[in-house]
Length: 166
Image 1 (cartoon, one colour):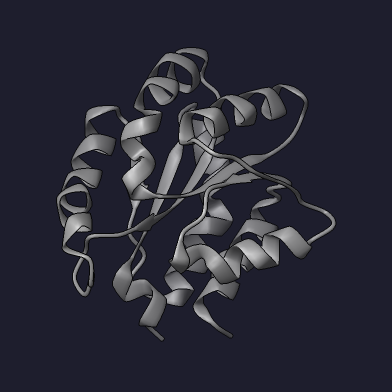
Image 2 (cartoon, rainbow, N blue to C red):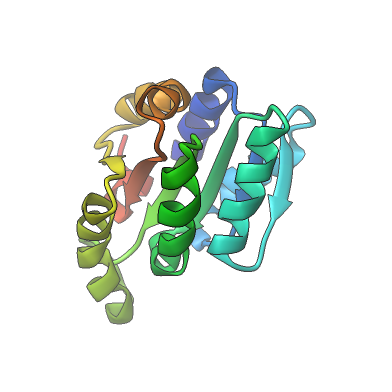
C-alpha cells in the first residue's frame, strides 16, 4: 500500500465525508483517491481561506469535514482559522503536505516549512507529525473525534520524509 492509501484509509475510518482541497504534488495520489470515492464530496478550491469557509458551512449542514492543502497556504488561512473555526468552535481536520522539511528540493519552500509548526502553535491548533504509515493511519483515523473534543481544528503535517517512509 502506498503512503497515500494510509491517509485515505484514515479519512474513511474517521468518517470524513466532505473534503476541500488545493493541489500539491505530494497529495496528488490522495486527491485522486478522494475524488474517485462516491461517499466523499470533494470540492477543489482556489484559496485556503475559501476552503475553511466552505468547510464551516458543510459542517453546519451535518458533514464531517477536512481540508487537504500544502503548508505554503497556511498563511492564507490564519484569519479564517482564528476568526471562524476557533471563534465558533468548528471542528476541522487539516491534512497538510509539509513542504520545506528535510529532503525538500525547492529552497523557497524551506522558510515556510520551518514556520509552519510555530504558526499552528501560535493559533492553538494541535498538530501531529506522523513518522510512519501506521502512525499516520492511527492519527488520521482519530482526527475527527479529537477535533470535536477540542472544539478546534486539528492539523496533520506530512513531511517530505512521510511520502518515502515504509
